Image 1 (spheres, rainbow, N blue to C red):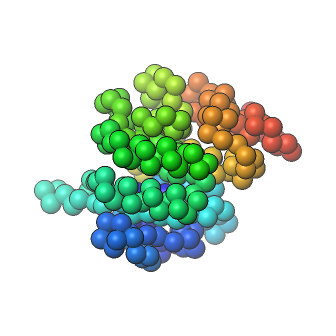
Image 2: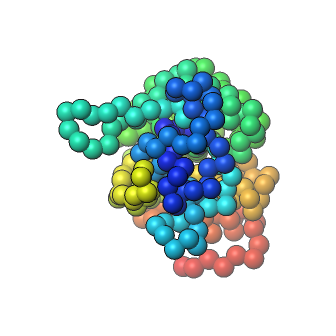
Image 3: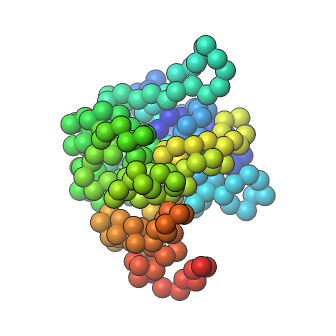
Amino acid sequence: MIDTGVDARHPDLSGQVARQRDYVSGGGALVEGVPERHGTEVMGLIAARANNRQGIVGLAPGAVITSYRACWTESRAERPGPGTARCNSFTLAQALGAAIADGADVINLSLGGPSDPLLTRLARHAQSRGAVLVAAAPPERLGKGFPSEVPGALVVASAGDAAEADGWLVAPGRAVLTTVPNGGYDMDTGSSLAAANVTGVVALLRAADPVADAPRLRRALLGSMSATGGINACAAARMLGVSGLRCDG
């Protein structure tokens, strides 16, 4: 996961972050946790703990996840509330390079920015090494940029925005309950959260079918989508040929 920092001490995330590298202020150093909102929200949807009688359950609570802090939170002095997350090409390039070196199977990019040839080349290299890239759709269809323009990336929009998402995957991203720093939970909205949901599903699908590549996953996920609810993990798994499944509905 390439994002802002994660509150790895959150009760629903304790033990779920295999390691966290800080490319914003630590030069890639391992850190125990950086409690920022956006990364904590995304991590919760992917991998919040199961069966701990607390909070929520992530889509893939058994996944082994490295958090690469390549973005940071800008405070909003003029009014209270969560700040805006920012990234730059340098920190993102370092994080992508580290994810490639670590052999990441799935790379979550719940972020968006202008086109960037270097980042696109790194992303394509990750894909050539077998990684599946999951990218948040640009908000309000403001034009393509990184990472949504990377060929072969699984671009995800929020459910309810399907009319604006021709050819994109759709997943829950409106008023989604997830983890926030300091042991809390809150609702938030955005394609970043929709992408996190798809990342969790892709992790499950690749665990069930390790040779499923991005084109096969995209076809299965697109084929599983309903008119209103977005992707269906069980239906996608059946389309990949995973046996022994019982899908409701």
